[in-house]
Amino acid sequence: MIPIIKKLKRGPVVNVIRMSGVIAEAGRFGSGTLSDATLAPILERAFRKSKPKAVAIALNSPGGSPVQSSLIGARIQRLSKEHDVPVYAFCEDVAASGGYWLACAAGEIYVDDSSIIGSIGVISASFGFHELLQKQGVERRVHTAGQDKSMLDPFRPERPADVKRLKALQKKIHDNFITHVKSSRGSKLTSDKLFTGEVWIGKDAVDNGLVDGIAHLDTKMKEMFGKDVRLNAFGQKMSFFKRLGLSSSVDMFSNIEERVFWSKFGL
Image 1 (cartoon, rainbow, N blue to C red):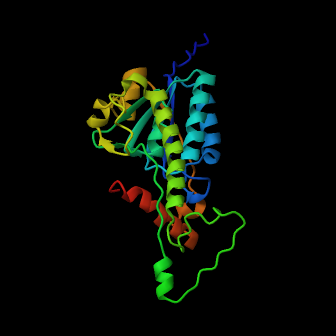
Image 2: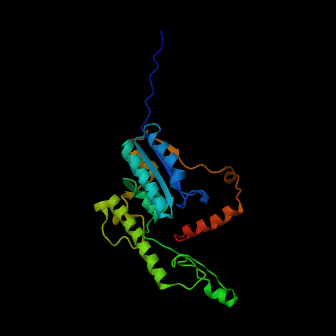
Image 3: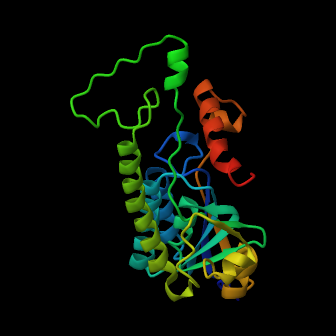
C-alpha cells in the first residue's frame, strides 16, 4: 500500500523590509543610504514574493531628502494598492523628519516605548566664512549671469532677500509634508500644532495620534496573523568591503556627515 503524503499546511507570510539609514539620493552616504533607486527592487519583490498577507517595514531613520522620502513613500502606497496588501510600519530608535514621512506610507504605525517620532519640519544649515576671508586677506571673486545665481554663498555676507527666498522654499516643502501626514493619519491626529518640528517619545506619539500603538514587529504580526506566521526578511545588501570592515576615505567623510543626522536625536 502506497502511503498518502499529506501536504503540510504552511502559515501565512508577512514580508519584512528593513529600512535603516539616512534618506538621500543613491550613494550619497554609501551603501546604507535609503533612496527610491536602491529600495525600488526590494519593495517590488516584497509585495510579490510568496503572496504575502502583509508587508511590514522595520524603520530606523533620522530623515534626509524630502524628495527621496516622497518617492519612496509614494512607491510603497502604490504597491500596497496594486497588490491589495496592507502595510504596517514598526519604528525603532527614530522615525523623524523624512523617517516619519516613510512611516506615514503605512496603514498603521507602531513604536517602542522609547522611539523618537515626529520632527515634521524642514531645515537648511550652512556656515558663513566671509569674515574669515577678510581677516586672511582673501578676496572672493564671483561672476554670474543671473543676480540670484550665487544665493546663500557661504563666502559672501548673508543677504536678507536670500533668507526670505529660502524660507519661502522651505514653507512649500513643509506644506507638502503636512499634507502627506494629514492624508495618512487623518482624524487620528489630535491637533494642528504637531507640525512645528518637535519630536515625541513612545506613548506621547500615540496620544497625539502620530502613531497607532506600542508594539514590536514579531509580536504584533503573530497577534494579527497567528503564531504560525512566517516573516520573510528583505533589505539592502552590504557591500563586500563593508562586510570586511573596510572603507574608503570618501566613505569616512560620508559617515561623518551621516552621524550629524543621527546626533540630533542623541544617537
